[in-house]
Image (cartoon, rainbow, N blue to C red; front, side):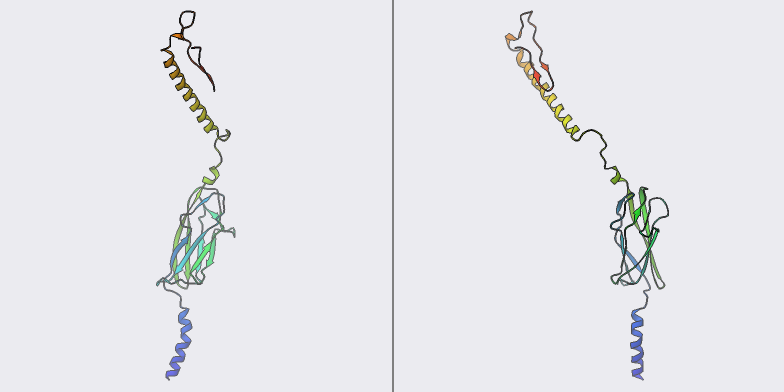
Length: 199
C-alpha cells in the first residue's frame, strides 16, 4: 500500500513542476525611455523579463508587444503593429527592428504577458525625435566664416588702439606741424594695413 502511494507521488512530480504560475510580473530590462529618429529603424528594441510571484523567471510565456494605432508609431518587421514573442528559460522576451513613422512625440508600447490563467500588463515609453534630421548646416556660408570674421574684428580693434596711442604721442612733438599753417596730419587706418601721416 505504501509503495502504491510512493508510485503515485512520483507520477505527480512532473505535473507539479509544470503548474502554471498564479501571478506574472513584468520587468522592462531594456528600451524604456529610448529616443529614436523619425523614419528610422529600431536597432535595440524592447526586452522584458517575466517572473512569477516568487521572483523566479518563467519560460514559455506568450508576450504581446503592441504599438499605437496613430500618432508617433511604427510597425514591426512583419508589417503589423502587434508582435508576439515567447520567453526563454531566463524569462526574457525581446522585439526590435521596428520601422518608425515620421511623426514626432512620445509613444507607449503596450506589453501583455500570459500563461495559463495568469495575466500581466505594462507599458514601455519611447520617443520619436526629428533631431537627427536637423543636423544639416543652417548656413550656406563656407566653413570657418564666423572664425574669419572674428579675426578681422580683432585686427580692426588692434589697429584702432595703435592709432590712438600714435595720436597721443604725436601731440608732444613740435615737428608735427606742416608748412601751410601747422595742421597735424591725422592717422589713417587702412584694411588690413595701417597708414600714419608724416611726423
